[in-house]
Structures are given as structure tokens and as C-alpha cells.
Image (cartoon, rainbow, N blue to C red):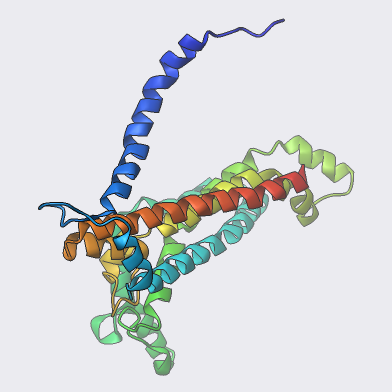
Length: 296
């Protein structure tokens, strides 16, 4: 039977409105932001075209930018470390827990909480013992007073404290994605593999992981790109301090745009952030394309 041929005009009628909305909300703002990055502008007054001066200053003279880039990339790398952990937890829940949906939902609770609530909660947990900080109080009670720190005001520890909060917050999110991917694998495949002698972790190695690679890739991309855009939790907990020790690209962009009133310069930072996200997405897709071919 010949496939039904849909006229190109009919396809355009359905696709064009969505395409116009997407272009209006994504590509046009990116183009405008790129243009604004070539201006010396405070966001209100007169605009002065300066070409690539903002970008040259950003890459050569800005003492905060490169540390912010390093913090952002480290944030992204740390965030990806939880994806294999989530996959392992999803496998264990699917295998050993008869009704795992309640546990998966429990892990997901931090995801639905407001970032402001999470930030304030963990600020309290990280407080010094004299201010009721739970971590330092526990360390004191165990006789480990030398391990206590002012976690968010110590430049050497503040960024790592934020990494941990991000891992805790999004653990349930990626666990749910991995768990759903595993549950969608037909049970007949495992039954056939069991007959051939592939059971337990051997089945996970040769069946589960190859079949969830596309889901794994989605989690990696969401985690990496989301971490590159980290802003709200950092602003709530540290505001980029102390002494820019927790500044990331997004917080630096905010500070330049709205606190220093350098809107053109902030737009240049935003343009760089968009390019970094785009490059990261392309690289991850290329890496996983080879991995997917290996398991085909």
C-alpha cells in the first residue's frame, strides 16, 4: 500500500505557526542579544556602537570572567557525576524493590521545591554551629571540631558546598528519567537473555545499559546545559561571594547588566554563554553518537 502523500502546503500550515513562535522566542532574542553585545549601553540611555570591544575586554581584561568560566565548567562536570549514580540506583530499585514508585517519588520531592526554599534551607544547614548549622553541630558532637567550617564564607569550600546542594536537588530528577527508561525495556528481552545465561548484572551490562544510552544522553545534556546556566541557587545562597569565589557566568552577567548597569557588556557575556551551551550540546551528541553505534 502506498503511503498517504500529504501536500507540502498542508504541512506548512501546521508547521509554520510553531516555527514562527520558536524563531520569535529563541533566534530573534539571541540575535538581538548579540547586537546588544556590540554596544556600550546602560540599558536606558543612548547606545554607542563599540564593535567587538566588549568581547575583547571580556576575554583579556575581566578578572572575574575566567574564574567564573572555571566555576561554571566544574559545576557542569560535577553535575554529570550523579547521572551514573542515578542509573545504578534505578537499576537497583527496578530489580530489588517490588513497588519502587513511592521511593522514586520521594527522591523527586527536592525537584518540585522552590529554589529559594532550598537555598534558605541549605544556608541554615551550612551555618556555623553557633547559629544552628546542622553540619557543624554534628561534627562538634562527634568530636570533630577541627572539621567544622564556615562553609559558605570560606572561598576554598563555598563552591563545593554549592555543588553538593545541586547534586542533592536534582538527584530525583535524573533518577526518574533513568528509572522510566529502564521500565520501558520489554521484559521479554530479559527473559530471552536469561535463557542464554545472561542474568543479574550481566544482563544490565549487555541489555540495560545499551538500551538506555539514548536516555542517558538526555540526562547528560540536561544536566550539563542546566549547570552552565546555574544562577538562582547561587544568588540565593552566596550571591557569587565571598570575593567572587562562587561566581559563575550567569551571576557575572547579572552583576554586570543590572548592578553595574553595563547592559551591553552583560549581553556580551550572555552571548558567550549561549555559544558555550551550543558547543557543549554538539560535543556531547557527537560523543554519544559513537557510543550508540557501538551498541547497535
